[in-house]
Length: 73
Image 1 (cartoon, rainbow, N blue to C red):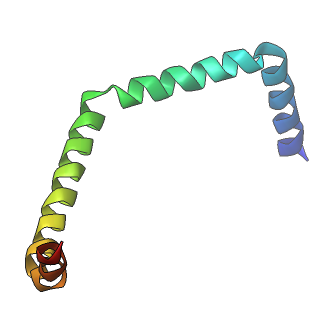
Image 2 (cartoon, rainbow, N blue to C red):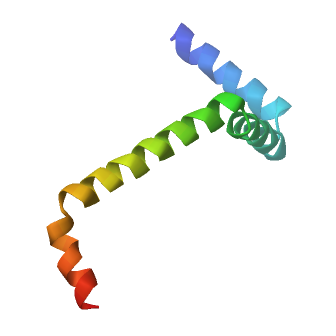
């Protein structure tokens, strides 16, 4: 009971204090700061590199699958 009352009070305070545009603004700024962070950019580069590397490995190992199709074209 006590937890439900506190939850309801908290929700009421949030609804009174924050408008929809305030919430959207807060979320947008957080996402923007995360996307522009150096750590995020580094992880994207690392992941992209791994994906491309794996793609070339697979293409090299299975060249008989696609080579004949390419040579016929």
